[in-house]
Length: 83
Image 1 (cartoon, rainbow, N blue to C red):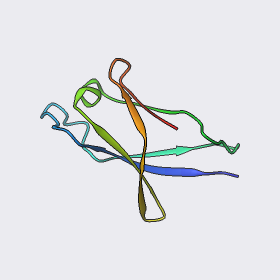
Image 2: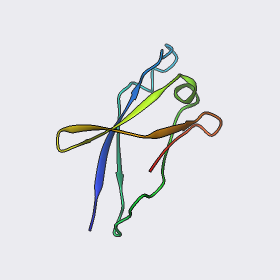
Image 3: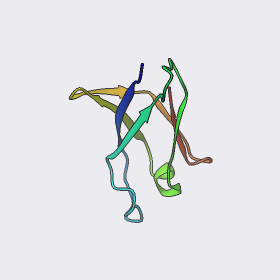
Image 4: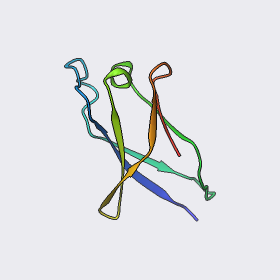
């Protein structure tokens, strides 16, 4: 079974003017490929500015509904991680 999740990344903190390339919200899409996966670890690369900008919120936007997704920002590796 193929499952695709669409997500939006929303900044909760102050975003500096140097983030012209990182306009929030960002639309992300993750897919499992040809195999169904359960509780898989997903990562998304962030710019250094966005990783250091402050709290971020990840929202799943499937079927017109928004659901918060627990996510963690790695400011040293400039990545967003979630399951």
